[in-house]
Length: 222
Ligand code: TMP
Image 1 (cartoon, helix red, strand yellow):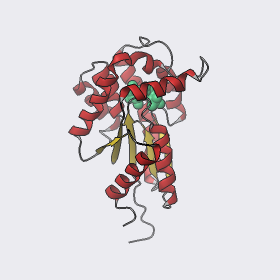
Image 2: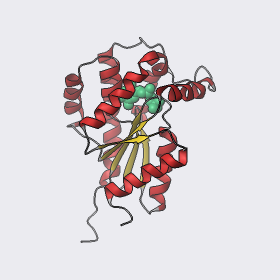
Image 3: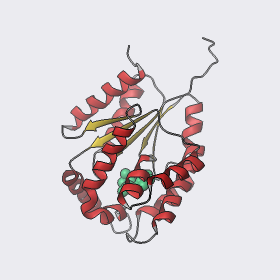
């Protein structure tokens, strides 16, 4: 192969309910891939670029009924396009791998299944805003909602009022089980892209499951 040919990097997203341990696992996968000599960019949604981080603050703070659902979706997509254009696509073009803590499946789960916006409407917006851009691989961390919620609540309680990003925790209440089911349905409908990781074991067990999946899917270490 011509040495100057730079192959596009891979885009991996992590999804799951509150307190599923995503941020820990995102970091562990980054360490694992970096250890194999892969250049990795870690990012998140909403956020992941300066403007998108500003939009994040509008979304994750304040009272649950602050936005009507359509405004909320459009804010997520405003942030997402900025994130894609400023962070994800340039990194992929440079051959880097991008790991994002959440991407568009969260909109289908939270705003679609959670807040009742028609899936077809979310899909139309996704098509228009991103030209139907999806990750190469999505890892869905599946955790018992009660465990996840108590972890997330404990994490938020340790923060000051201004630091708290708890709008969605306040909003979801009893619908955590519905959210979990929404992610499992997404995995069912997209078996090529999505893999469910069972979050019940230790952090190390879950990290091993993830690195094995990623190695198998992308043929690493073969
Ligand atoms: P985080 O807690 O994983 O950082 O995510 C912030 C919150 O935003 C989380 O409660 C899920 C929510 N969210 C949506 O409702 N829709 C979306 O499209 C995304 C990316 C996140």
